[in-house]
Image 1 (cartoon, rainbow, N blue to C red):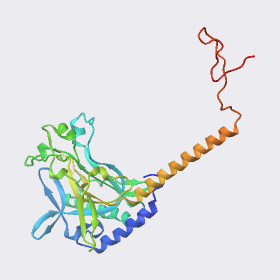
Image 2 (image 1 turned 45 degrees about the horizontal axis):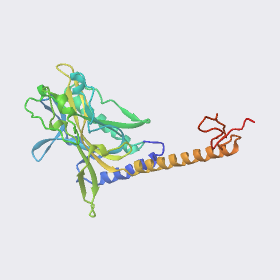
Image 3 (image 1 turned 90 degrees about the horizontal axis):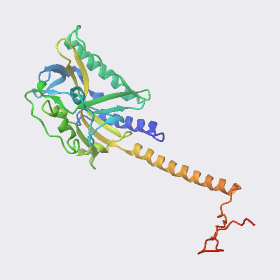
Image 4 (image 1 turned 180 degrees about the horizontal axis):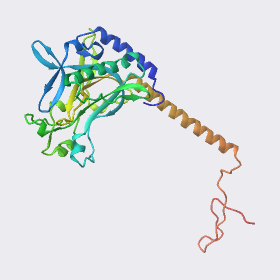
Amino acid sequence: MNRFYDQQAAARSLDAYMIKCLQTSDEGDYIGNLELNSATISAFQNPDCLRLTRTQNGELEEVVVRVPGILCFKTLPPVDRPLSANTIRHVRNLRQYVRISGLGSDTFNEFEDIVKSVHKMFSDHKGPDSSIPLPVKSAFESHFALDLHARYLTDRRVAPNERHIPFTDDVDPIRVLEGLRGARFIHTAENEVQYLKKGYDNDNMVSYERLPPREFKEGDMVEASFSFIAYSLGENKGYKLVLQLRSLALLSAEYRENSERRREEDMVNALQCQSSESRKRAQDSDVHTNPIRRRYIPTNTSKGATSSSEMNFD
């Protein structure tokens, strides 16, 4: 975001959208409406992890929550250049990542307490001897923020029953990730992130359309969906709780586009002022701007000739 980005106006618009989310229940679990009393922690294998779940219509399902915010930082597809991932660890940690903030919105700041409540559920499930640290607290210009991510690849050894899903051209257009994964890694549904544009029709019914991930820019108002997963760090090594990115939807690019337009106008005005000042300095100076006359040494073929610009030494 540049210096022309109107953070206060963006935060007000975000607040208005979150009020709307509180009043609707047909678009999935908005984080502000998350009912933890009906949720539980369930253990899974391949890979070994704990997930926030609930029983819906007699079936166990993962809880996926929606959170709107302003996109502050991102590392998103496409992977369109070679990567210097020289070790297995580097390849394993390649990820899609976003940081979203409310830019000071009190409503957004309340989400920190919700994350802490979910963390307590994970800790209580494992007991007092467990080691599940809180996700690292993030910030943007001192404002509370959430970090969401999803790895591109999964170790084949921890997901032996999964099959590799080829990357789309929006994610891996020149097959960089395909080349790096080799035989050790696979790309599964757990690694996939949906990139979308969210809108409403004339009847105020929500609709989504696919959007290339390269279209997302810092300063956009977005809505991310994520799940709470605590991955095992190994036998007797505890767990790591992550906010697993599932989708990213563009809500509005208005404030980002306005700031870019104002920045361009400011640059044009600055160049015009600079040009005007340069002309004024040239007019006010004693420097001669006309060509100087110069006499050349005559040759046999041009004896006595002078150039169109002469200097008289007489």
